[in-house]
Each structure stands twice: as C-alpha cells, then as structure tokens.
Image (cartoon, rainbow over all chains, first blue to last red; front, top):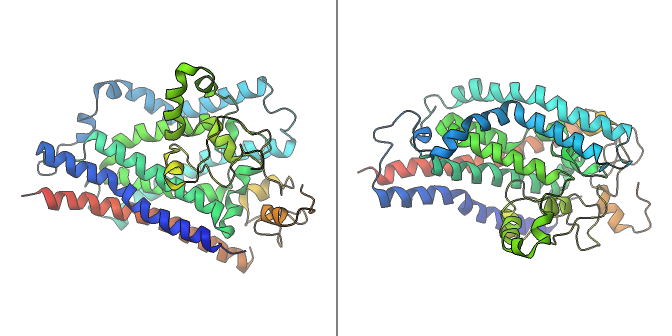
Length: 354
Length: 40
C-alpha cells in the first residue's frame, strides 16, 4: 500500500506552512529585541532564562520539578485507579489489554531515560562540541514559546505521519488498539514508536543549547494536557454544558487537546460524525489541527473506541513489533499480515472485522 | 527479524531523524541569525 497523491500533496503543503510556524518564535524574538534594543548575547548572564522568568513560575518551580520526577507517575496511577473504581473500563480490560497497558506504562520508565541521558550527555557533546548553552541568552518567554512550538509541532508531525504513511502505521497501532479510553492510553505505545520520538531528542538538544529552564515548564504542562486528554474522565464537559463557559470552551477546544477532541481520534469509526481517527492529531496543542484542517470539533464523545481490524494480538507483538510478530492469522502484526488492515475492511464491506 | 522488517525499521528511523533535523535546523539557524542581524 502506498501513500495516495492527495495525501502526499497535503503533507507537502502543510510541511511548508510548518517551516513558517517553527520560525514564528524566532521572528517574535527579532521583533522583541529590535523594539527593546536589548542584546543579551553580548554580555551573556548565566541562567538568563531563570532570571527573566516571572516570579510566580519561579515560585512554582519545585511543583514542576516534582511533577517531572515522580508527580506524573503518581498522578497517572491515582487517576487510573479512579477510572478503574468508577468502572470506566467496563469489561473491556481483558488479561491481554491489562498486560499491554502495564508493560507499556512501566517499561519505558526504565528504558527511555538511559537512552535520552546517553544522547544528551555523550552524543550531543560529541556531535556539537562547544555548543552547550550557546542560546542561554534567550529570555524565558521566548524560550517557552520556542520550546512549546518546536516540541509539540514536531510531535504533531511524528504522530500524523504514523497515521498517513502506510508503512509507519504498525509502529503506532498499539496506541489505538484498545477498545476503551483511559490514563493508560497516554503511554500505551509500541516501544520503537516511543524510543524514536523525534520531539524527545529535539527538546533534549534545545536543552543542551541552553533552553533547559523554559523546557521544564513546557514539558510538564504538555504531559498534563496529554494525560488528561486520554483520560476517560471528561473534565471538559462542564465547559460545553454551561452557557456562560461556552466562550472559554470555544478557545480551549481550538487551542489544546481535550478529552472530546482526542477521544474522537481514538474512535473506531467516523460514521457517527463524532469519530475522527484520520485526524485530531494534536497532542498538547489542537491548534495544529485547526491550522492544517485535520481537526473535527463536535463536543461529543464517540460511543466506541479502538480499531476495526483488531485481533487482540499478544502483548509482546504489540509492544515490540517488528522484532516480535503476532501468531494471530491475518493480523497486521503477523509475519505476512496486511500493512493497514482497516483500509482493507473499508474497501471490502463484507470482510468480517475482529 | 526478516530483511523486509529491517528495511521498514530503517525507513522509520530515517523519518524520525528528518522530523528531528528540520525544526532543529530552522531554530538553530534562526537564533544564530538574530545575533548576526542585531549585533552592531
């Protein structure tokens, strides 16, 4: 299966728009320095981002540091327990799904940090010697804006291409295979998808170049938004229910990923006009979907989740395909399975889906 | 892993590197440009 011409055209067009979007923080900095006449790179002050950060964020710094070190794990476990207690997984959390969710939650916590540490502490100083902290003159808000755009737009592209380029789909499939939504979904990924996350290494490089302080805040806020967008606790519902909150909802649902828009991305069908599994790719910002026309906002939640071509493949195949293959006949993860099974289901209406 | 899988994996890593390198080039050269443009 190959990429169709219209998708290829859209990807090319949007890639060019992205160049401008990536450059926006740099343009904003040029305007700022021209307007203020500041030239902080001439007399670099150690930790300038820290010094130029607003007082309330400096005050909240220990909270953000705790979130990054243990807070998010505690939050994920706490909310996961709440979801379980509320019965939000229904009877869909089968032994296979349980194994996948637990392995995908735990294994990257132990395996990814050493790889990123090696990249940051050994590889970058070797590849870019003398460039450590070279951009430490960037003021806090400039760095914040820059990291927010760079990290999240890169993840948008990483995510979108895994959906739109057929050969990449199977690396991302595990994230969509569960027939339910919940906290566990945020980390439920094939390990190869996780370990080659482009934005992880981009942000690590920007930290090496001197943008570590703003990155602390951006990555914590991003994790919080991403986790709660996957949760089966619909925190955004009050914004749609109460008329007085509608203007806030309008902005919020266009700016960041909410449970409604992200659940739509995990729907198993688009037939109800709510599901949009071929769009709504945004992670922290939904704005990218608005800009590129890949978003659908309905303020409703899909009735069912997952993928039509699911065969409850073994946990090891879902976690480490193509290193380990599924033994399930006809599975996308089997040795001779189809590249994108859902496309075959769509093309052959009488084909029985799993 | 079969040869076909190794090729898929290599292509996937290639795309990851590309998605990493493009924004890094834009931002790195943009920030360097600020210093060059605004230093009198």
